[in-house]
Length: 320
Image (cartoon, rainbow, N blue to C red; front, side):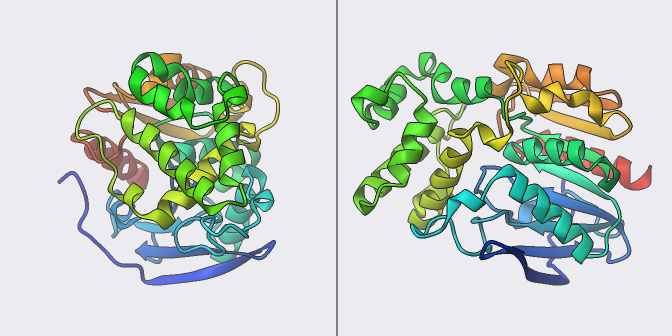
C-alpha cells in the first residue's frame, strides 16, 4: 500500500505567534505516537490532506501547519494590507519552536517538501536538539543559484514561455532579479497590476513542469494564486531571508552541522533542481543522510514511486 488511508485531525487550532499573525495547526494519528511535523512548500502553498497519508496513523502523532499567510493561517498573504515584513525564515523557525512547546513535544521528525525542505534544514541547523530525523523531498536549499535557475536558467528549455514571463516586468528590470521584480509588481497599489503579475508568475511555474499534463488546479483560484505568488516572490526576491552564504548558500554551507541527525532525501530524477547537483552535494556534506532517487519523476510528491519511497522512510523511522 503506497499511502495510508485518509484520516481526519483529532485536534486543531490557531496559534498566536505575534505580529498580528495566527498560525493554523492540526494533529492526527496517535496522540501517544512518535511526533512528526509537516512543512509545506511554496513558500505559501499550505498543507493538505495528502500529507497525512504519508505516516502510519497507529505509530505517529502528525502535526501539520500552514505557515504565515498560507492556508488557514491569518492574515492571508492574498490580502494587500497583510504585512509581509513579518513573514521571513526567522519568523517561521520561531513559529515552529512556539508550536512545539505549545503541543508539549520534545523532539519531532521534520518532514518537508520543496521550500519546506529549506525550512526544515535550517530549522534543524538552528535547533538540532528539537529534531529526531528529517525526511525531505523535492529537495532545495534556498541558494541564489537555485532561484536564478528557476527564474532564468530554465528559459533555455522553455524559451517561448520564458519570453512571456520576462516581458511582464518593466523593460529596465528584465535582465536583473526577476523574482524581486515580480515581488515589486505584487506589492503595487493597483489591483489589476497585482492580479496580472500573479497570473504571469503561476503561468511560468506551470510551463516549467517537466511532463504533461502541465496544469495546477489550485492556480485557478484567484485568492490562492495571489497569496502563493506574493509569498514565493517575497522569499525568492530576498534570498529566502537566509543571509549571505557565498556561492553555495547558507544551508548547504552549514550541512555538516546536521551530523548526528539521521535523514532521508527522496528526489525525482527529473527534478530541475538536480541540474545544480544540490541534492547530491547536500547528501555528501551531511553525515548520516541517505539519498533515494525515484526514476522518471519531477518536482512532485504524488507521482508513482514517490509515495512509496516517502512512506518507506517514515515507516523506518517510526520503528527505528
